[in-house]
Length: 242
Image (cartoon, rainbow, N blue to C red; front, side, top):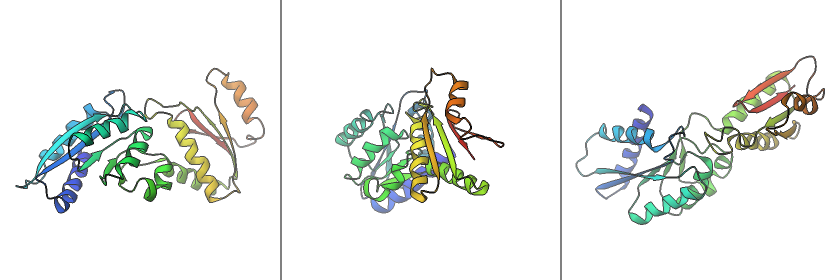
């Protein structure tokens, strides 16, 4: 609740200094599916509460609309376009899911509308920040680049130069579709960017395969020895290193 209040105050200050209209139109664009961590049912009450606690300004009236992204690459941008065609929009809150945020934010840049997201964690949102996503502000506590920095410092501290990644592409899709795939993609390319001295190997986990046999065949003695470090990344995205 407090974070939503802070966001709306920031929006209020920005809008108040730039907009001439008496109406401030906020669009919360998130999935309706209540199984998602960030869904409309949870976020909308927080946004409305934050607005109700804003300082009163006589010439400004806040309106909140919502759209369902379905955490989808197509439904997210459709919802944004539908809402944009209906009325003027001053700011989008969301999307959170990466595959919904990508195409929507790339389109919104042509409308010059700010987008504030607690998600959009994929590496692409950092790499193409100024070219493809100039109106996006990410306010989540972490993203996949933060995870990379954790592993980089861990490897540097232990002087590890070789690692193997075992991951399930669809792992934790209940949070963000293909979350583990996006996680490993960020780790892989960020390590390539900083140095080619790190040797890495990627292995896509097959759900029906025997785990014990898979670990023996894939990890084996090449990635194990006297000291074995088995690190769990988001439960199903595993990293082994030495």
